[in-house]
Image (cartoon, rainbow, N blue to C red):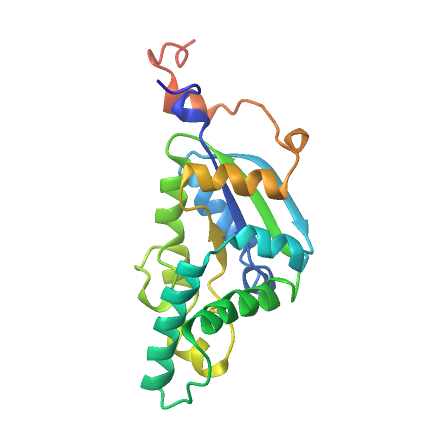
Length: 202
């Protein structure tokens, strides 16, 4: 039995440096708010490497899997392969961190029913070039794994969002204090969640 109502599920979002630099903060927030999800905190910050290593929280299996894929992409592009897969996997995180510290980011927590799944759907697949039209990544950037590999950099895909409710809870606790979360009501919640809809007519 859940200890909290589904409408209070929270997810964690970062508008990355490319989203900030391209002036897409407002558009990204607009798309999220249009679903009915509620902002509970929003702050702009400059991030540090130590927190980012904790944030990405990857293990050897992940490094091996991603590094193997990187090697295939390098071979496809006719590039030299001079490291083992795990090191190439770690290079992905190193490149991400280099990108994430390159400029300010916007950190957001939103709340509402299925918040994690809804935001993941809005944001789209990790690779912008293969994200569906209508998603944030699909509509606003054309980057790809292939060009990122050739240029030896991270994919610039505008937004990070949590994959699962458990991951959202971990990320929120890493980035923010409890007293930064605001508990308040918005009138839109009534039309979304009021069982009887008995407060519309006067």
